[in-house]
Image: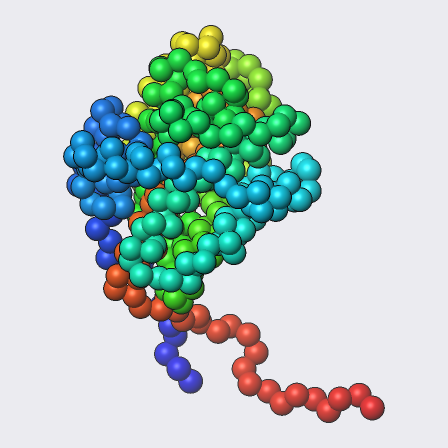
Length: 375
Ligand code: SDX
């Protein structure tokens, strides 16, 4: 008989590889992208600058930023073929299903799909960054029975996205809250969807396949789907005054409360204070203070009951609601941001690739003969 294998269920605590993209230090509540604290990036930089940082390791200088912005604005449009594919997925499907299908279609029509050279993958990453907002805005309008609005190359990445969704660009304060959410969502080491992308990349498959798989992983409510679940929960609770009782009943029924807890952060999620401040700003701008009150009621009730803190999805859900997005669009918004981290990790994986292929500890019946087939 063989020695029992050491099983790390959920890969908890397992260090699977090195990375130079972001560092999470739960003890000091710190998250840095290429060494820069996310809070400082969120306070002073555009999402285009942060995307450049995540991919290329440095914030762009003025010339690099201008060149990158031009490349981004020039390739926002998607082909009629991809729009046609998107339009053929069933009405009423979840927009994450639509997005997964769209990325698959973008791969199928890229002649460089299977070219895994570094420069090719960097070009594909930039293309996905430029095109995903176009697909997501189309999904948003299709849900509402509205015609699509083409990208406007005179607008920045975020402003253009709002234009394509709503036909107008909101106040700068709203755009800023949105950019803050994008910067905070951009990258987070070996989370489930990023690890999924790296697993697919490690077989030397292509970037679109890796991103398609990552979208599938992000959809689940234990991961990115939580931002939608949070807002559904808040609407179900309805009134801030009911929140504490609602939460206690929920915990008594041994049910998870969405938007709380984290595999890596056990004290608090480093990104939450910055996103909570953005939610406060959105509430002040739109008269949505009841959602802030509900947030605070739930947060203190959860801390008192279980000592568990909110994660980034908790403030992001109501912030997106106050920006005017439909709840099923929230996880696609997470995709728009995380596409930067996913693609950076795919490129990093391929820079020093090893096939990701762990072992399993078998617990089924040991070898036995197949019985004679019935006559
Ligand atoms: C994201 O990895 C990343 O970086 C992810 C992410 C990113 O940027 O990519 O940060 C984005 O996915 C945030 C997480 C969004 N998910 C949710 O909000 C769903 C609700 N939260 C959980 O189900 C849970 O906290 C996880 C999935 C986030 C973490 O799960 P773990 O590490 O496997 O922890 P666990 O489920 O084993 O919980 C440990 C204990 C348990 O209690 P005991 O059985 O030990 O008594 O804490 C309790 C859990 O019951 N617990 C919760 C809870 N989260 C943990 N109890 C109630 N509600 C919760 N939300």
